[in-house]
Length: 472
Image (cartoon, rainbow, N blue to C red; front, side):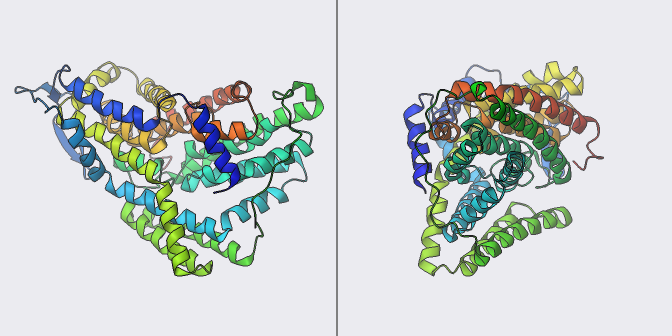
């Protein structure tokens, strides 16, 4: 990890007073058990659709014999949650290990920095190139922390081109949020949501690719228009009073060698191979695990890593995913408690009843609102998926919405606000690294989010009315 990312993490640690995601999620586990003592218990009849149990609308009935959870049930639910989420947890560890192997070879840092430096001859090329490059990283494997070392470089380049640090941060976190919102195979977000919803992994990738391009067009217009304004009238910069006289240091050893380029090509080919298999042979999480394991071995061999060196890098990368894995397990425990307490269907019934008579469009927008508000408290994409999707997926069934609509509502609600939520250590830390006050960043992002959500609502409604035509 670089000094830049270390600085971001320490800055985030100093500045955060809001409870961590794990604190909130464990609080939800406890709250779920307390609710089981006061909320009426009931259940829907279930039917099997595509191998998944779905509630049957109109069949909710109160339980004749209430269930009383033991006082320690919430503690037992945690290991049960980990067991239920084991496939996703294992995938998270594998992804972290393989990405760490790539970073150990220097391929990721060299590829990103080389691309950024080659795009610096014109503002529109630099901004457009960074938005495309960084969004693809989030669109595919949920990249975010990997961009932190580039923040000082982009700030320096932006200042040299008579722009400001807002533009630099915009070139990183705008595509980061867009990439997560439209992601096709992000294992920390969309794959989890699709797994819970019971739809094929990577399904709808063509529609999501179109969304990505539309969102990027909106993001580019916003960032580039601000950059041109600052170049023409520096006094209108949102950080005009911040001192940027001290320089920033780039990452070490970023030569883009043939070996590193081959590693990146192998990685892209591996992801494309999985998407092909998912579409043609309905590959799922187990097959993705195998693809990542194979990629890890190839990357270590091509990168010339010694066995012990590769092992340590893989273990270190997997270890960095421990917090994400813990959040996933604890979040899954919420559904365990709600189900064992026989109140999950009651909550679904309470939410679905007013929506069943509402137009499908309104139900979809309600899902989007819930997911967006949830991201303010649970900025972890994987954690949010396990907290909300067990409710949103059956809710889609009860309200007659496609499962992919529920997945898109989760993605939009989680992704766009990722670039702005003050509970995100990643964003807050890099704002400190780039010396951008949060108030200034909020003023820059808020109008953009309104435009992005307007476009997202259009796509969400299209998914309601034309799911088959869109390949969802």
